[in-house]
Length: 503
Ligand code: FUL
Image (tube, rainbow, N blue to C red; front, side):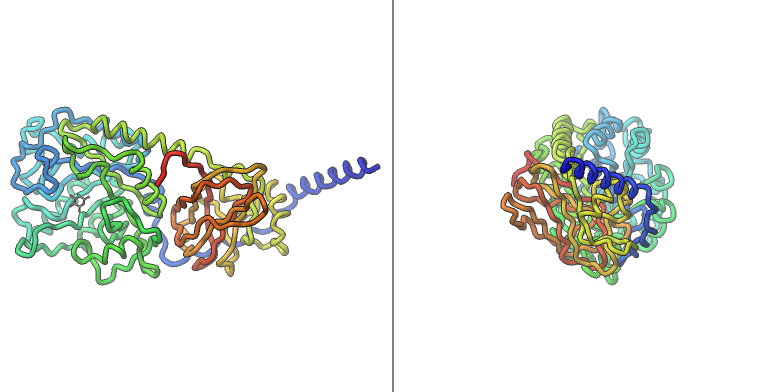
């Protein structure tokens, strides 16, 4: 008799669940309204690239200088075996989505035949003056499916007009030429550095025109400078973004170079910044920006640390990998990058969060009358997940997310597993097309006695946050958002085990 009742009960539950599957879904709740400044589509696409490769290449590659004087003879530039396809192959295999080349560094030498300069590849003996690095690299990028970006230094130690009004016109023509002949460009990099010193030449740059023309000619290019407008300098060259990092910045009254906000501000952003200007972390794989025979690439440990401190802290990583005097990425750098890639793959290939039996949330956006009975709700959702429920934190679609009701600015999501999981990295992502919201959160795990223990307390999340925790083994993990500036909108939670990096 008992057995019969049990079978009947199971059958009834089964039918109820199936019926639920076909039952009309409640009208989906309206999506959250954007909060604060939000990124453009180009900025979202840029941020999602996560890691790009910087290539410092030019006369300095051959002289060993970091800042060329501008007086070097053009024949100094003589790569004997330039092969941009090799750069692209290395970049792709390492997982970089784009390459940015120093088309003109501070010495003024142009890697393409810039018509408004006489200090270019055209004047050099290299390939009888017919060589063009931008042409070769942009073509290789297109063929390889890697995006192409350009660094052009405003500071120019060679241009005769530098320090006069006329230079702004020369610079605009220089930009125009690069932007019309080698596009599309995903990022335009404006360096704020200037070493003229108090008695040197003073150039008042026409940033309005530089940015305006760039936007017109390359509307999808994200413009980098200390203060954006597309993305900002992270404030140091050590590969370290702030633990608190807002993608917002106030630029009123500020400018690139000497007019930039403090490096601390650039590192953390402004809590109430009026503009969406995310941080970009530029750092070199070697001690210098340009190749030197005596220098060597950083270790995998150092690269992983940089990764966690940049991509893992709401910043894009622009890692400089300088080609050598042959015009090739040296074997030791390329090998190191492959080791770095293998390490990242081994850490991030297995997302343990996806193994959760239940994902319950304290709140989600809905029009349902009684949505708070979260466990049951999850059981039902596993048949056809409710929009904005916790399930969307582990799916593949970037644009699906967990979102709370408008009034819920604190909330939790809990992952329950069938068996204990061991991890030490927690990845969180906010859905940034709707702005950056979270300002305080913590992570808890349940121990074998059923006690909850906090393993991390942090501030911002942004596009991506990877929290390094102690190694824990648990069947239950809870992410608690303690403070959000508007309702919570997260599109990813991941749990990973890193057996390689140790601090
Ligand atoms: C700095 C420059 O002075 C360095 O040479 C390098 O190009 C780095 C990326 O930016 O401001």
